[in-house]
Length: 268
Image (cartoon, rainbow, N blue to C red):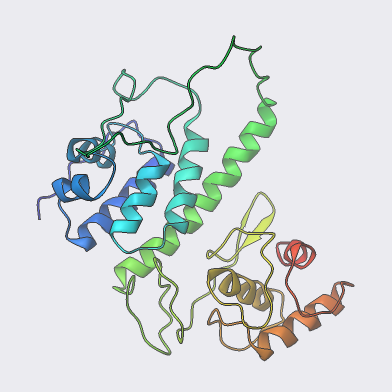
């Protein structure tokens, strides 16, 4: 497989991390740029520009790449959000506007990321956020991007991005798998605690739930000293009992259900 071109030096660290992960996903799938063009709404030449850092990659393109490669897009979209927030206002990297260049199709292609056309006279410009708030937000997003990138790299370098069995402590970066255990991290972004698997603060979890949100909750419980046994993403009796103990310790309703109030306490 041909070697990738070196990414432009002017790329921000957040954008660089995103492109590194997209390149790895594309390489792991074995698809060529032409194949991506045939399987997605974007042409092969568009993918060449996106993955070589010549144009910012659209959110929809990230979702479609994950879909055709059989990967969970959640963490890629977190990296994309962080990269876009850190980029700030400015001209496109090659000095020109990005033109829509979908792959050949039998009809017009509409993408969710395309902005709607003007419907009336423009209103007054939106007020810019306070400078201090912008700096804090970017710092928090950068910290979160680093945590997510570490999670990606750990799983990929261990060769466990798509496979793994019971007892495996690999991160399973792209798709949640049952009967696996996951390693926990204890990171913070702007004072908010994260374990590297989900950023939610609103998901409702109860017995029978499973997935990345449960892995995140189990890791956060362990970080607070309320371990629920295996960190396997399965919300069973052990996890429910640990949640009740945590809720009682934090003067919350001890119903064993992780909701917004419990997430708020876990994220501290």
